[in-house]
Image (cartoon, rainbow, N blue to C red; front, side, top):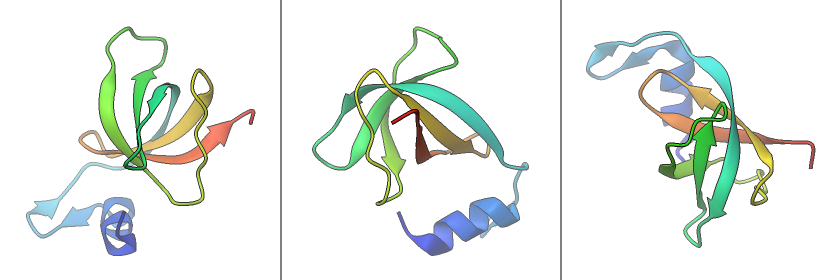
Length: 83
């Protein structure tokens, strides 16, 4: 994940124009993928969201919680819950 992209999300702008504000979400890690992404569910939902990028310092654990940064379109794993 490019830090410039993270800064754009936090700032609320992209080359295409303004975006909605960011928010924190809680999810559950379903699968830790070999490419550094995770498959997750949000807020107890059954729908699995695949290939969510994580910051390099995040060490996700299957069946554990994860904090996610969301702008309504993109999700980025920013920290683990209780690990």
